[in-house]
Image 1 (cartoon, rainbow, N blue to C red):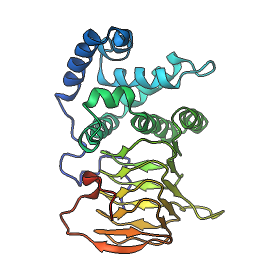
Image 2: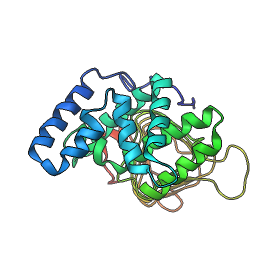
Image 3: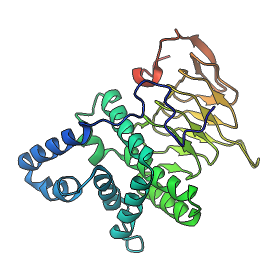
Image 4: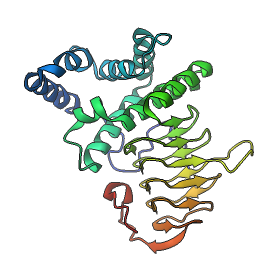
Length: 273
């Protein structure tokens, strides 16, 4: 499986820029500020007065992550630098926004994701930390990942490789290990672990194919391949490779259904076997 440090480009329009997305977000923010004056200051400072999409996201992450020894201004500068230095990262962010909007029936619009999506915030903090990690600033990347874990209850190692159009639904309890690879258009629900099997060294975490859905509470252990367009049922423990286009369930997980090639589990978000 390829490393999604770049837009994988497999799914149509997975990581393409969306020219109207941020205009729609600004319009929704202005309407909400008028309708809910209590939120007006937050909306103006985090969205409406920010000069670019990168600055909007940087402001939102900084507001969530700031503490006395990691101040708002420092986090904002780090996030803005990471987003401006690597244009593909902003494409990934936009694809993640669209993914949540399309797949979560409780989500009214992309502004809601940007402001309130804890799983989205954790994933974008990872993207900033990953950019720092790739530039050799590993201590800082780990510090940001640790802070994110405390704030969002999502633990993503900054060395993991995650594609675009990814949704961490609810987010709480998700753990993604150092050598994990997640391709484009994947959906992961709460309390999922992509972990190792013990004290093995080197490449030791799962590789998740495009279009996979991993149900709530599932555990996937070891350097194994989860084939594209497959589904892992809630609560399953996966210890072996999973073929493409199938559903696995149980402890340990076994194949319980074969899918049509056109089936896209991460879009359908159906946790029923």
